[in-house]
Amino acid sequence: MAGSVVLVERTGHVAVLTLNRPHKLNALDGELRDAMQDAVETVQADDDVRAVVFTGAGRGFCSGADLTSGSRGEPAPPTQNDRLDDLGWVGRQALAVYGLDKPVIAAVNGVAAGAGMSLALACDMRIGSENARFKTVFIERNLSPDSGMSFFLPRIVGYSRAADLIYTSRTVEADEAHRIGLLDRLVDHDELLERAIELASQMADWPPLALRVSKRVLQHNVECDLGTALRYELTSLSYGNRAVNDRRESLAAFREKRKPSFSGT
Image 1 (cartoon, helix red, strand yellow):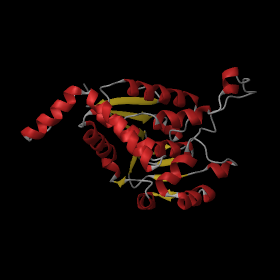
Image 2: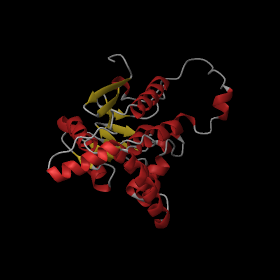
Image 3: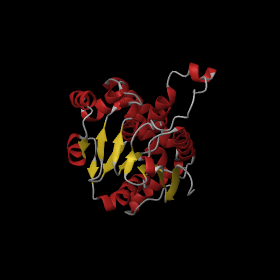
């Protein structure tokens, strides 16, 4: 929808979610946060969507929380649900994106800062152009990291590099981001979205149930010992066997030396 703060477009089995507040570098206000949550729930529930690309409209990916969007006057008192919520919107954002059990790629077209950087880190992979840059920001606002940054960043770049970026809040330009692993691939800006969709489409070509379970296994086994990981792998194999038609198609395509076509059944 043209007027939406999150645009959802489909290319084959790939859903492209575009944060659409370009005049604010896609800073996260309440409307954008709610729309993004709704969009994630929609693509999660749609079996025809097998991979997802996040990007931003205009010059930025996401510049973090919108500090200019507060209402004038005294804020409304928090509801009981607000008082009992020990995650807040930052936690719900991290869980929604990380918990989306389909491959998620961030196409980082510009600045990714604060909670916007965390959004990119919550994705499975990040592709960026020469315009991409990252900044943790939190310490500049007298805050410690939130929105999952303290979880994601050291797992992606290592503890000491995460400490460097969080304690200094320095800007990481595209070349360095690629070198230290913040960006998995660095491409020309004019080709960024096309290349992200191309990669997502490669993933979406495989059996969709096996793809989703593969993500669950990968995320689970990052956090456990080898024995537990091996048992979880064996348990998860049963999910793939439930897609009987995909199993048959995989074997038939292999024998017939052709590209398979999977239905998710």
